[in-house]
Length: 313
Image (cartoon, helix red, strand yellow):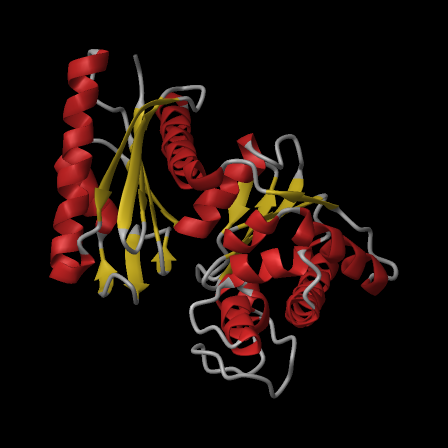
């Protein structure tokens, strides 16, 4: 069976799969990233893991993978295939695409983790069938993926979709990016956790605890939650004004609160828009499989473009 390698590299672990031509995951595997051993060890682990996946495919499906797709965090130069920087992995300017292509002997596509997950959500997940979508992941930070006609826009310099760094509270909390008042300082899962830990007096409390307290009617929790929802709505309306997506897909840890998040968020956006059209606002559908599915799509897209080049006279 013809298949590709799909690899999703995270800060602490790697998720991988062998993906079939219809996007089906034929085999799944996980492995620690081993970042505690340094960036060289992380890269070596990725190469070894990919080689193991290649060998598994050859043994169980009669042929090795035809291509590979890899999603990594941080700053990614997709055009050159370089993992430019990732603070949580400690690497800089790693030519990961070429290293993997040399190790595997097949073409390799390299993508940004959030954009790759967004590609999967837009094409085969919650945004299936939409010609324009915006995927937003509410995790430790906030990042997005801009989808247009089945592909995700990386931008001229690889920074497209960084919605977490829209300034929504000028002069507000400092952000590691150097600005003050960025969206992710108020509406990420990490920001809600920090705010609720302070408001509740429990240093171990997190965003999930805040959501539970909101559901139970706690007024302090409702104030923290509404502050995050209002900041998120302000940032999203800016994005909607610029991009006019048909579907807005919300994922990440904060989205696990379900309608505790989505009901007030839809209402807050509705109150803010004037001439804009409110898109469908839906939860992500693919969970932690999105990165692998997206990496597989990158690999199949690469093969399709290669095939077209080969038949062009």
